[in-house]
Length: 600
Image (cartoon, rainbow, N blue to C red; front, side):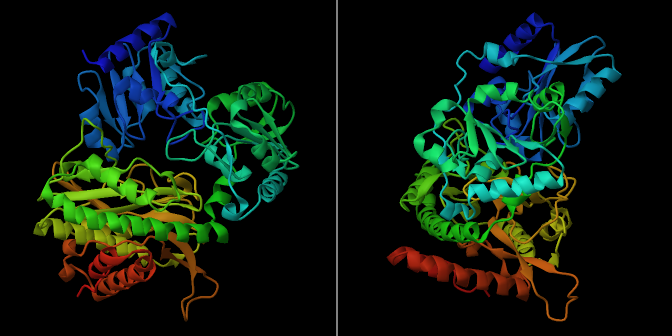
């Protein structure tokens, strides 16, 4: 038996002591975060799966792990098929699987601090239909057997300067108060860590790659706020920044505080505030208003300071990436580098800027077949040598005080095949289609997702993930509510209307299992577009590309590009030289100019 087999057996034994037949284990924390601290990595500890999205369900005779198309290959490499059944989502749901697998009389446990109200309702209804019961646990059973479970991070909460934030916290809280007045609500519970960070102009170090601090906030109708955070995270500078209008409490007092709103109307986001919070508010006599966190949209609409900061961060980050691309082109074919050494070299280039705070996620440094795993995570065990004949994919980003970056490039190690060039060029055509898209204000991302796929569809090909995600301002690398994604891909359709000021990624790809992966990713700013002769009553939007680094010319088949696409590519590369060139010196600059010379 493996360690993970032993852990599964231990969990089943622990469940028996609680009178439970099963347990649902999501990959999240008490804040419904996408990326979580080590203390909340229960799914990885139990199964070995290291992806960033997934859920497990354990029953007495069977166990399943639910993953989307980004992790089809990865889950089979990391999770033992002898212990676990692999279940694809969104084709199948946890609730639907429970309805088929659970037996009458069984009690299935769930942690109410790790599930939304909707998730709980769906599972409860499915189990009730077969005579089984969903049971809330007082303490997570995994924690009882995870003997070396990490403690939550002790990192301090820090001040995010108003010069980078663009708007003072007091003004943000006043805007939340105005929203509460519109909703006739007495207060709103903020549970998403990036919402709290944005609203209070604070940052932290509790989650790897995402500068947030563990805590909760309740904003009242007058804008005053109760912040619940571990006492050790607070210092005098933070107290002075927050001022008297923000009352600071121990994080442990949060659950009890939810019972003090008898007769009041309290807003709580049904997607971001866990079931335990909704239940505690209701139990205390509050009327819970299931409304979206008001910070979500406000945070997505970047203000001028945030946009200017991102532009500055993109220049230094693009220069670091360009230096790395030159290095990998030179060193990769020699056979002495690996995925880990390449990731370390790119990190070193970023650190040489003197302004890097962290990477914005674990760098995806993937050569050959590993590139076909969209969210591949290199480890000492999986680390592969970079060798001639492969495609090397590097998806990475930096966290700077003035902006968060995310960019993907692909480099051939030696000469690429004609198939590689064909696939790369089709991905590039899709990338250009998104970059040049013009659409009515309010169009949801789902409606433009197909623009990126058409060149691949025409060859009978596709990619199994969304085309774009929102991004934070020195915050989460994946930020909602906007996305570019159609219904039949992971995460479902993105129906959020696109608005000026939203930032998104543009990252179509192609993945040939067992051989190589391709993805071209830049970040975009949604901007108003004026079209001569257009209907003045129908405002239009388009995108400004924010990321600058060369797109590998030896992988491009110019015969597949239209004249319009060639013009875009050459104009983009000219701008790369104009923006990045002045930051580079000597051979690095000469290399950049050569890489960005016109393609015809």
